[in-house]
Amino acid sequence: MRILEVTWVVWVLACTAAAAQAAVPNYRAEIVHTYPHDPGAFTEGLFYLDGFLYESTGLEGHSSIRQVRLETGKVIRKLDIPAMYFGEGIVNWNGQLVSLTWKSHVGFVFDLATFKQQRQFHYEGEGWALTQDGKQILMSDGTPQIRFLNPTTLAETNRITVTLDGRPVHNVNELEWVKGEIYANVWQTNFIVRIDPHDGHVLGVINLSGLLPASDQVVGQTDVLNGIAYDAKGDRLFVTGKNWPKLFEIRLHRVDPVGQAGR
Image 1 (spheres, helix red, strand yellow):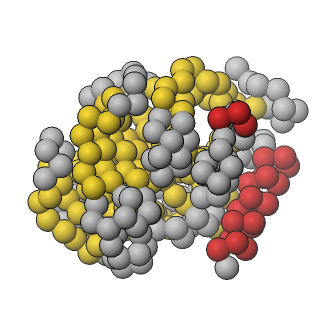
Image 2: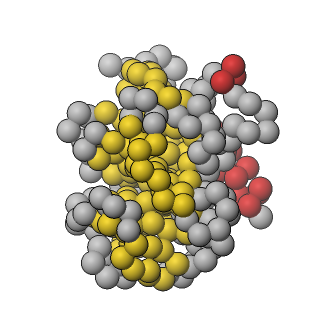
Image 3: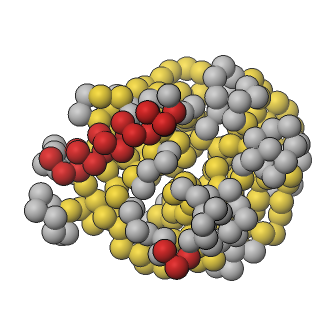
């Protein structure tokens, strides 16, 4: 079922990019800057705050939460997640760091400055990714739905369904709040979708195919595109992938119906 869902997502996004650009804008990326990234980091969650990247990594026995220096990729603080958990998305909220696990139905709240655990919380379904809009925390679970959580209680308050041309988009993964929109990786694709947070419809599709050069890819190690972070003060957008050796600052350019970059 997971393979069929991935195939369907790729087909829908590719067909929409080719045939419906006037209705759903498409974007390409210009690389502004390239930074080092730990190729051993199976990236699940990513955000930027006060000059640093915060990153969560997955896989049982290898999951961690890290504070990373952007310019060098150096890990300056690291918390290993207990081996029974597969670490997933993270988000900052009011001096805290909230994290998910994949199939364990349990999340954690840590002190952002020390990574000291403060409490646990529970949720139904899988945990994939987190972001926040300044008022609520947003959560993806691998389905077409995005949940809205009360940031204090972490109880669900609402949901939206992500749709592209009226059809649900499955495997919505890593999330980032960017200028009033939700940016989301679509798992096992090279696409990021830009989502209207009010009703879930896709506002645009970002194609990042070819972003990581083949010369930087290691067979059996380099995995899929995943990880979006936004520096709101500097208006900088960062992306990376699972076990990628590089993290990119990118600038988006709209592509017109005949494939030329728009202004």
